Image (tube, rainbow, N blue to C red; front, side):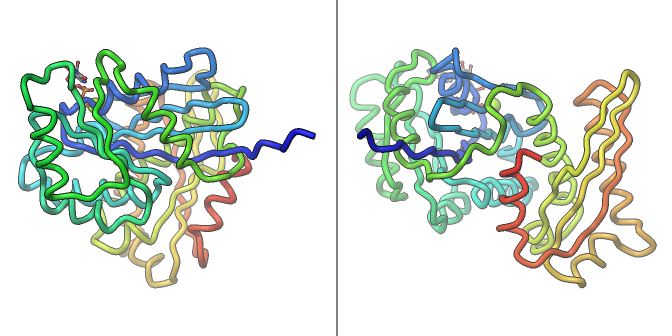
Length: 293
Ligand code: GDP
Ligand code: MG
């Protein structure tokens, strides 16, 4: 009898500085098997999700566009987003190119991650002389990834190898999203990302990391989208901070999120946010997502 093949699924975060080729690489990875793409959506301002499903796997890619800006004042915000991407990920793809230089804070954060990290040296189609060897030596001096691959996201060189490695490192897990339902589920994912971004921008250090956003309902009609989200925190004190004096802080998050959502969906949005305390939400939220909402 044939052994039953276990299903694999997971979140893959693509991290790196602007222009190194993250989006191009994700498009290659998702486009790798065009016939089994279930969803692909993007905006210019928010995390891009690409979901690639096969019979026995589902890979949820996220990219962080516009976040890793080099300006020093954005350093802290950048690190918050990077940290969030790392926390959510089962696998981290750290993209560099022939011209990229390392960033101490980013490397330190990456090095402390427990997940497998695949270091990508991209744009090898442009390499001259010993540039690839030199650059690899440079990176290996400052950073120890789980593995390293040289690729060209543009031509697709070595992208199948990267895909195999992702699949190999993917945990055994049921699919997070229905494989045949196309667009509405990832839209909820975007809502969560947008609300979460506002939480990251409005609260200090530990608060964003203790919260998780779940879209509880999403109803769209011709004129308006009604969205109800729940923000999970771990402790009562955190709930108070999220809500703020007289509800002011939560209201600000809601207004900022709604503006972005309206821009994203090109439609009027009514957004409700509720704060809930849930011990151990990290586990629970994965469970909730597992039901596909
Ligand atoms: P991101 O900002 O990290 O998402 O980078 P993009 O994917 O938007 O790519 C930035 C630029 O680099 C674009 O002009 C791409 O066409 C180019 N690019 C990306 N990957 C490669 C590659 O492998 N080779 C070459 N020659 N150009 C690339
Ligand atoms: Mg990009």
